[in-house]
Image 1: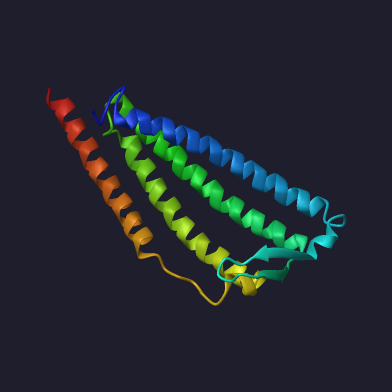
Image 2: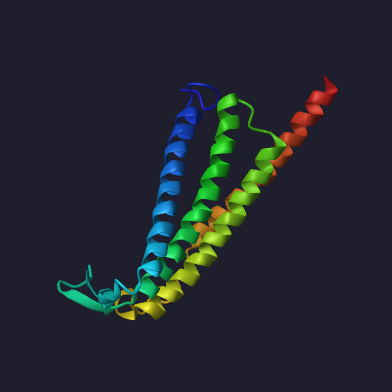
Length: 181
């Protein structure tokens, strides 16, 4: 099976990216609507201060005191995370469009890969912020894990920036070849 062009693996992956991108938009909308609803109806949902959550590490439920305001803040925090994922998947979709057309070494793809790299950095940093907030808001659930650095994610970010430079060089070579002919 071919990697580039119509009917190739890249065209299949483009379809998958389209579906995931749409699902992320739906998730973002639901998080924003849910967070806004909690803020607007906070006086009416004041009874939600005791939530029964089942801790997966233990066999008994844990009672957690969380206000609707904290829950709304958590939803908005995850909405920001999903919004950055929307940006990443949007750029990936556009890159895979060029792969499906069989012409990946375009200058636009360099910028798209750089945006993806920056967005992945933002995701990692935001996950540290969310982890700290969750530890502060619900220490009995989040535990004493602290901030854990994911070396695989940081390595992937470096790979994305290296790929951006590879695409930049490929676009330059392509432009030189077009000028030569």
